[in-house]
Amino acid sequence: MMEKAVKSQILAIRDTGETNMFDIPVVIDIAERDGYYKLIDYLSEHRDDYVHFILTGEVRE
Image 1 (cartoon, rainbow, N blue to C red):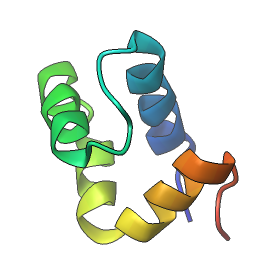
Image 2: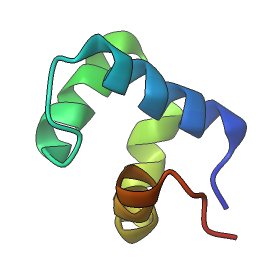
Image 3: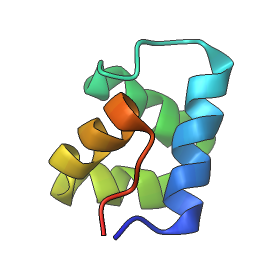
Image 4: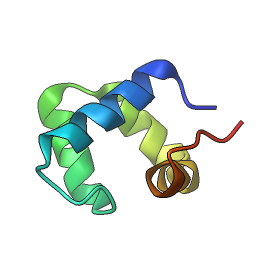
């Protein structure tokens, strides 16, 4: 399950328009720069759920 903080961090990075959200290494770099450590942890264990969210806007339960 995706925490609200993780979802907010994903959306904050998306809203910057700095990168394609499927370019996960760049997303991680931006997350590190901005102090989004929950997102970094989430991506290390839930990449499939992240991709699903980016594609559909839906959070898997």
